[in-house]
Length: 388
Ligand code: GLA
Image 1 (cartoon, rainbow, N blue to C red):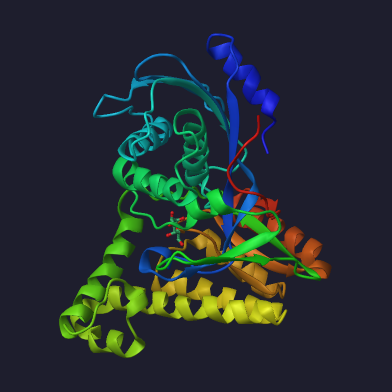
Image 2 (image 1 turned 180 degrees about the vertical axis):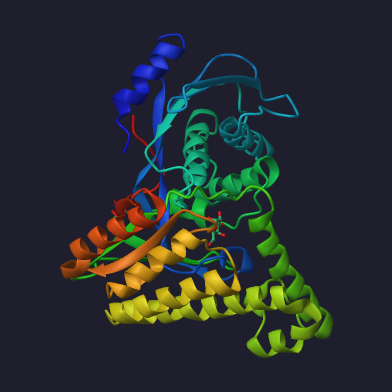
């Protein structure tokens, strides 16, 4: 986590010398359940020990926000009443959360904010959700008397992505960032929003992320395209079964998918097939975790990778290569994590194989792509909170 004093020193320097309150929110991992959140399915995320830390202070103006991105050394000032909002992509997360909070009835006024992060950007660990929930946590405390519920903070983060950043994401990332708990993964039913904490201490194994350093970028069409494909299949199934209620792929069976196979076309069919399979895999992983069967968990992870790569088509050469190296090193489980199109693989690896696997992955990746993958050991941390 970023040192509070580091953020504070920049906050003091860039504004009027006064201090504010400091908040932090984490990025996330996801053990399994990818692209299932916007399909009403299950996900299995946990917060990490890396995130975004922000210092915030009301500045006494009606609606002027003065914002400083410490890592980028970029300063942007904007007015909340400006309907277009700021142009800088990082500042749009601040603007978006403030606007969504205003919609919730929070009387957000002008404020100063400086923030920094240690969650890698574009690595599929949800640095954007970490920003959203950090800013939400702060604005809730400063302007909302902490009356905005954790779920409304999650939804404000998601609405920020939808309304100001062009990504029609689900709720997994913001959920994990707000609700995370040290040492626990969470199984969330994205339809009912019920969730359970699962203490995760796999005896003899560890989780490690290998970052391909291919920047994943969800804004723009590919992520939203996947979502559209899923929604299209649901529409066709609904039309065939007017008596039923089909909101997402969660409500659809394998048989119903087969019925519309021809009419939806090969691409949408494959994508929906992945989602139905993934729904079953998350449940299988829950059972396996309850039985302490990590080999089964790993098997499901490999299946997910294959589906994300071949059917959902959100992998890339580098991630497939990392997955291949994991397989050859007899790593228990390995797959793309997060939205895809770059970023990390998540690997469940036996302690005795860890060093050999990491060394081999670094060497072979470097030989092929001219740089090593970055290695992040997963430490499951707490969700959004005020630090001081
Ligand atoms: C991104 C989105 C999430 C989720 C994942 C894929 O991280 O923000 O809502 O859809 O991709 O599982």
